[in-house]
Image (cartoon, rainbow, N blue to C red; front, side, top):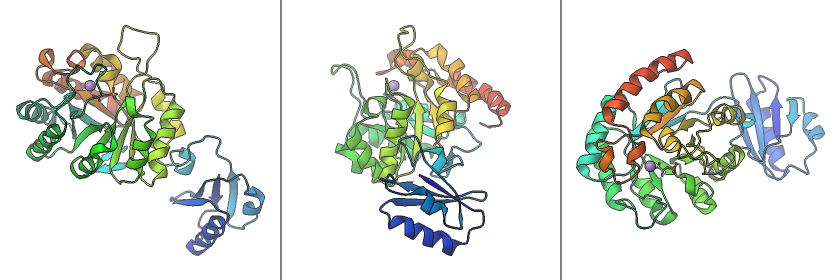
Length: 337
Ligand code: PEP
Ligand code: MN
């Protein structure tokens, strides 16, 4: 339930109304913007009589929120949310670029790729240390050694690091060492993990599950936000459809849909969506054109010998060319690279 207050309601009146509503047994989240003043009610609102709240002279209107997600809902936060990671804003005018290899393989590899993508204008470095592989016999990542190497790359380049968490086992280390914790597609509905991440104040990059609906993605974001952590970035990375030509089908319509339903920033991962290196370029451009706030792209200096996801990884020089071309698309939709 949303309570829309009359413009310029004095703070003391907002506070006393908030207190009165809290006494009805729900949580109240005030969103006090320049144009709009809103109280978002979270919890069991079924016993609350909207007429009684509307009777308050400072209340303009009371609205029901149809969707099951509340804190992630745009109704609760009409303006786009911006997430700040070490001074880098995600969700603002500037498109956030996250790039790096699928997996951290060695110090030389991660530092070389980090330096190249930084030179192309990338703000954040990605690299998997714990890898969710389909086969237990495939390379599983360098694990904690991979985290150490990411820290070395951060020190060398100054770029914040983004890496995937697979379970709560190393949560303390992730909180300590990582700038953005990625929740992979396969863990999107690992609710115990989401709840634990909700207790931290780390930025979480939440990827859409392989066959998750947009509403399910937003409900997973809600799990993190319900714990008090509002630093959530959503990621469309392709979903499984009947099409087998591509690894997944990039759901471009999810970006405007999420923007309508939610205030959270959305980034697109064209690499896992396509599964093919040559498709990363057109899909990245399309993603920016439909309103994505950023891209997360797999870049490898030796894709043929990559230990994971080589076929979808582009080379640093291809990435550099792509970033240059993206600035034209960004400008066309009122954004910048
Ligand atoms: C990854 O980013 O390397 C990854 C495994 O992605 P996803 O969870 O989207 O498959
Ligand atoms: Mn990958």
